[in-house]
Length: 465
Ligand code: ADP
Ligand code: G6P
Image 1 (cartoon, rainbow, N blue to C red):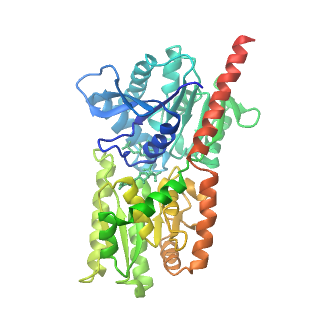
Image 2 (cartoon, protein in one colour; image 1 turned 45 degrees about the horizontal axis):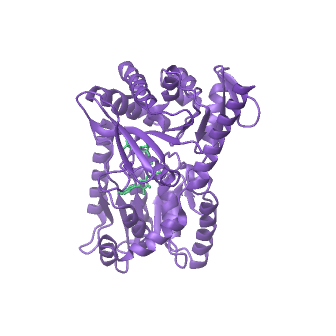
Image 3 (cartoon, protein in one colour; image 1 turned 180 degrees about the vertical axis):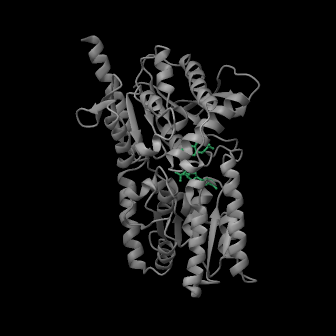
């Protein structure tokens, strides 16, 4: 079997050995541990000048990471990736800005990373690249005469053409994406946006099922929703119920209900609207005052990007205002914690809560929604309230699906989640668990890699013919 090389900007292991908060690191780490392979990307460090990748073997995975100079970090990561592409791909053109120099830096860093990786590639390797930081990565590898199969998976949404076209080099970016052999999306609508952009722009056409000819290349374009390992999560959640953080929450909440939210502190997650809908619940259904708390766990992320500083301030303001308005001496309506937890402890906290409140304004998939369901006690499960704009909503009809822009609807969904009868909770939970098992993390990985390896086989047959 050929070796797998995974490429992503963020590479998983932290000092503590628990992945960084973020769906990509969590999903890829679990998926790669089983198959083994090489994981290449940014070391997370800013360095004086570039150097060769540093190599670190941990179990089945070899990590090869490189530092970024301050200029590279500012232009490629903080600039074009996170101040242009991230907001635009999440439909926040109002928060997106474009700077030519940052885009040039983005292309330059992709070329630099491709060059670094090229020294490590063997002839039979298959290369799987992840996320918006690396849209031009395959093209950069092709420029270095790398002929291995290269696939790309986008963890975020892919916006409709009208929105994508607000990024000035949109055509160049999509053309670069067509240097991959397989391009994968989380949902059918993301995939459709990509296909529509190409067809409406007359850049190419869909030929047979799932295959496109575009910009002079042939590529497979598919939908591969990322999953989790639900039974492993259920087990971890059950086993860790006596951990300190879990016991503290249980004691603090004795007799009260918990609505639980866990997200990176990102404006795409809809946290302000979420707090306000909770406030509306306390206003519309005052019988819940003193009886339910919202626990929002939100570790800061990308804090040197201005839009993230603003959302942090806005949230602190909202939490303070709502708590000031409703708090009682022995009850705080919103518990707002800006910290990261060990992954399994987080799962145990999910299990302790009666409602999982996951309401992004836009999200590629949202693994938290899946983890929340998996962590529940099947005999007394909590209820998931889920935004219709999370990719996960396509797969989780057992959730109470809401529009995160409609505060009254969200407040009503919270009220019905809090009072839902056990039989209905169990039925919804078992339906969602069955779906999570049927489309788990290995389904995602294997479906993508089967398609990528199929390309490799087809190409070698063509070369021999
Ligand atoms: P995103 O990729 O946008 O961050 P996801 O919901 O898909 O959103 O993935 C987030 C991942 O990060 C989940 O696996 C979640 O458990 C993890 N995570 C989020 N917040 C924390 C936290 N405070 N501590 C530890 N892990 C976290
Ligand atoms: C999302 C993105 C990932 C990213 C993660 C954390 O999950 O899709 O690519 O790694 O957020 O963000 P960060 O900027 O810290 O890597």
